[in-house]
Length: 461
Ligand code: HEM
Image (cartoon, rainbow, N blue to C red; front, side, top):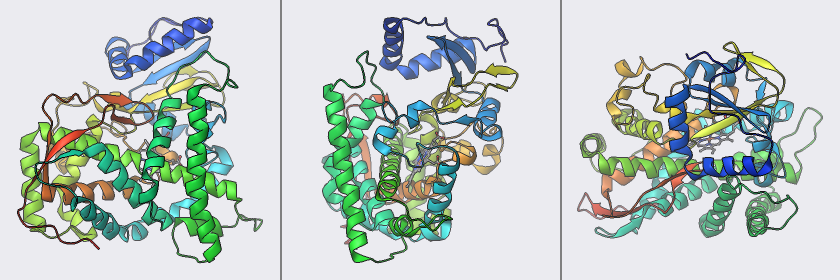
């Protein structure tokens, strides 16, 4: 590890001064091409990097030991900062006070409350819904047709999260949710010098996005309250839960948690699948191995929960796609008090960015870091990968609550789709990764579908 020059702080680029314009220009240039910028930084300064902007300490981390320190060992100190929690400028503008955007005792209580919806026993029951929705969707695909894969994956995962967690039909909401997600992404990655109260076009769109999300989620809540039914799903859990004093969650609290899970629970998995199809189309040997496994194990039948453990290569493909193109490419923390990690001082309220994309391609950790090689996930090889070098779902107490749900969903959807269709890039189409909160194909992912099996698809239930 390169020791440094800057008063005990890690090495890094020059500090940025107090001037608002200077800070704005720095932020703008960072947003222009963050993936290249951070990759170059790691190459130049090492995997623990520091500089200041207007006096605030900024750290960029792509070092597994430091990741353990921040997300696991000192998880109580490194909490979510204003990028998440601020109701004016953070993700809380949209998600309110839910699992992603809260800290401390409130977060702990919510986590305990929501966790049972994600226990293995419960999520295994979601498998059939996932496959049935996928088959329904595939029944609309025609061999030789161009498919907007990004749109298809987004709608499919949205319908799945709607049905499994809220027992609701989200198909009619897809357009509004898509627009809201676009605004959330944009608003979280836009540099501006304008004061918060000024109604810029983006802020007006943010307000509309929130109103649309409210309408959808309060629709779920009101319908459930009116029926008075306990359907045993996440929504019933939220509505019926009581805290130690016997108090129920307010409608606003239920709204915030529901919006959080609705948003966090679909776009991430959709992007995991987008990048998987994009990578498979460029790596036809891996694609052929995938087809061989699917054809041998499933023999034309729809995959079930029990099949997942018989589809190890399918899962390896997903894992490798999430290594190269992690849907959540970077996460951040801010220490609530001065601390020291691996010998480096980290003052209170610093911004600590953990670059998942960078550690997943770290040249000292991965052989052929930029190559798509699902075989590296074979048990005997995977055991040599350092802990915390692969963290698509984060780590420590705040690890993704939907981790197993998402792995199961991505594996079943890939198995179902690849069983029936091969997807190819449209010649000349530029696919550009846009790393906002999630990393998504900026201009969409148009692909050509070719049917692999001649038989018509079974009607989906
Ligand atoms: C491939 C799909 C997914 C990826 C890559 C992903 C990634 C992540 C990551 C990296 C975090 C940690 C954030 C941090 O520490 O700052 C996280 C947290 C979270 N994820 Fe996921 N996620 C996925 C799917 C899902 C699904 C399906 C759900 C719910 C249905 C979900 C709900 C959440 C929630 C609620 C949190 C916050 C947990 C907490 O702080 O207690 N995610 N996710």
